[in-house]
Length: 407
Ligand code: C5P
Image (cartoon, rainbow, N blue to C red; front, side):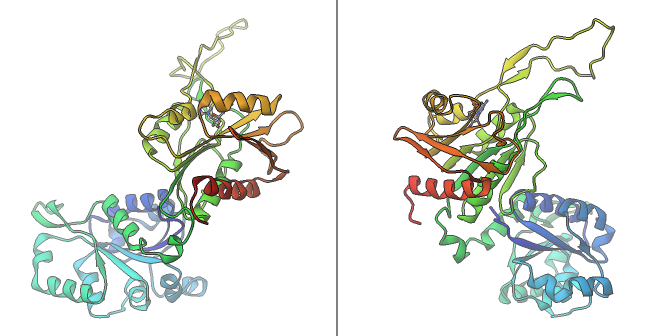
């Protein structure tokens, strides 16, 4: 949803600051990145360490930190952001903003910016209703500052009324709205389209420390997510455990088991294109042990009872009301690649099967190159060996074509 947008989050003083931690997670899950400034009073409510752990970025707290100024100055902080979000915004920081004060890093960055500013006020109801606060809000609105909330409800101070900070998901939505008019994005062929991708292996537990897995690295699926983002799609990547970085701009939904992948994928429907690049385990252990299994004596060999996992691709392809326009499966085969892919196309009910040979010596699983064959009801198209990113870019362009949207 946020397609790689950079948010500069300013956390000022207020008990609602704890909700900003959740906001950071939501922004990241939705494909954005977050740099954070915490004001002195903000630091009384959340620590730079928890913010840095969640955002994965350095946190800025003091205007006159010389190391920070040489690494990334206050001007650069607001210049490199696509949007500044002040959450929670105290009565005090709004007063400073309304009057053009620049007494610390947060207010200096706010004064130095030419980017949109979204404010999520949070304060006691009387402070909110105070004529001075209302005057400041009026001034800020006239200056083009955007607002989300506050909500009405019970407050930490025991009172009831307007002044509770908007919930993190409402702030996330308001952030999304700020970018809706992004002209560059609108010109891309998959703008407004949703691409849902499964990737990676699944881990099926045997006991709390052991699992059944496979050699999938997730590289092809992640490369597809990157390509979909580049074409402007709202890209959701449901991924089993991998060691790959989150593709910038994609919404990552991490899962472990096939059942979890099934649930997350179904919950993401409808979508325009669904690509099933994951190597889903066909079977799981029926009664995985609650405790680590132990060898009781030298002849002790436990037997694992396996049951079938749901077939995510087949279920989505057969969905009565929410079948994506294009359903694309992968067929990793070790023999009779094309024949098996044709059978799979019919059995799974998908529009395309991307077949590849993962037999001995192919180096596809875990490697960076892939040789694919596109199998559809119209026949078979063989592509030469390429990097997985090239395969992804070409394949997404091919799907755009199939979808019939103008490039
Ligand atoms: O494992 P199989 O060869 O049947 O996988 C073919 C396609 O089906 C792949 O695209 C894979 O992601 C998908 N699949 C799935 N759910 C399963 C098994 C496979 O979505 N349980």
